Length: 318
Image (cartoon, rainbow, N blue to C red; front, side, top):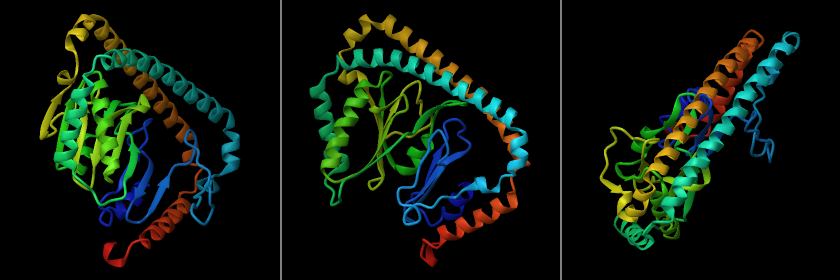
């Protein structure tokens, strides 16, 4: 996948690399928009079965290149490492659930004390001044800009800078005002036919919106806080959540909210440590496979896939 992305970078003005949260240095997918193609890792925990085999999806089965007799002799070690790795991920999931429960306590309390009329008015001004009308059909892509990884909470701030030449930053420690504002802008943008990339919180990926990007306009809005510091990023406008929040109510609960935030941060640190442990186990698991793979055949298959991808672009674009 890395080689495919590199091979098509010049032909793709908007190539997407989907990083693995367990190991951000590796890829789980690449999307080639102009080539109208993608490559994904379809192995657990994100299994994907072809819906239209051959006609739409092609399976690249690298398991064909295993020395199965050699691996069969190592089955006991492989099974033990797999079980240990799965236990790390199970523990990590529990820690993330605990952290999100604490964060949601703060989020819901802040949400109850928002000035919704102010949010609606501000959203309308942003849509009018920054977005305007579009001739488009509306399009929305849902993504994650950040994740809890073995390197801690990792946010790809460089993605925002690559997409946008104009960026608004919402300073919001609890995320409630940012979510309400972004949800309002998102809905109005889609009604006006814009292309929107909606980035959700990795701990609440179905409900809490953290960032919006409008690639066609090179404009975006991100939420900045302790988890997503966006250090060094150039902001055209900084929006503080306090203008949309009844701060006197939050101040009364300051000590409790501070406790929740610190406890959640501790659980996230523990989750990152379990992912580091899982990565060490995964590296040991890879060692069991390294000399049991025919890499010459893997290389031949890689070249074949790259050639198929390149044929999806006109010659001048390769």
